[in-house]
Length: 85
Image (cartoon, rainbow, N blue to C red; front, side, top):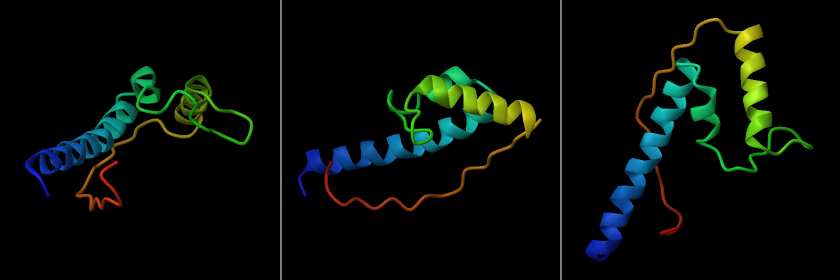
């Protein structure tokens, strides 16, 4: 594996770990705008809803109706690569 490939792999690992951490923080802070921006624009929520706005509405109603406080704790992840991409 070349130095460039190794560096790319290390950067990818860090980005994946950061994504998990940001997911938790945005939910616990109830920053739904930041949270939905962690997802691709056409994120599939249910069969006929595929957008960040639909995700935001679902998350908002879930937190308002079901959870008053959350505290996500991110542990260690095992990340395996199938390919460089």
